[in-house]
Image (cartoon, rainbow, N blue to C red):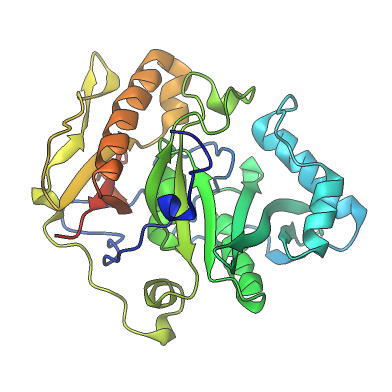
Length: 331
């Protein structure tokens, strides 16, 4: 599939579904002992429920060139010094001035520990935002900073009159998926193979740069109910998750987490699709297994999204070894 799609409608499928619970019968979100993803382009750190940073962290706009330079340094630390896709200071400054969003997370010593960056444009006559990067330093991950940056971004975009935000993430990065789908209320109807071509970041070795495109409707009733509890009742969780068929499942073979062959002829309105709980941990010791996960999940995502299913959420297995995406199709 080429990128961008020929028409905006190709990446703007509508539809609604209730959001998944963070803890349903027989399933669980990851505990603090579960493996953590390292992160990736357009991904984020995972916010542990109830965990408080050791040092207070403040989210604010950037104030000088030195702070924009700090964004570049964080890119190099997260994606590697040879990362060719890093955004330079000049582009960050211009974007911030002309309707984009560049915001940083700062510790009590005023050191930047994370940032979010995106550009605002027009689609079918209305303003939309492409959130291009979200990065948090490794030692500050797991403290909810990524989510706080996204919420600050949302507030700024609402002020600008933006109602729809796009970004991408690697569907093999389970903790980023949990943030984007479960914690923020995004959804996806589009899978792009090799969206960023060949990457020189070590995060992308052996698995490439396939992406799900997230749509985040920042003023929708579902997102408001999820992020602003006072705005209304939280939607009911998905029913009967445990009875849903699996398009891809995972299991251990000779001590290695392996995917099953994808099942591509399912007709249920609710389908589950598993990925490793930590692809980076798997890739370190078993890179070929990581590649097999990419191949199996790519095929399944492409078939089901083309068939009208929409990625609406996901949930971790009790042991944290797997994250199961929830795909929904309206009858």
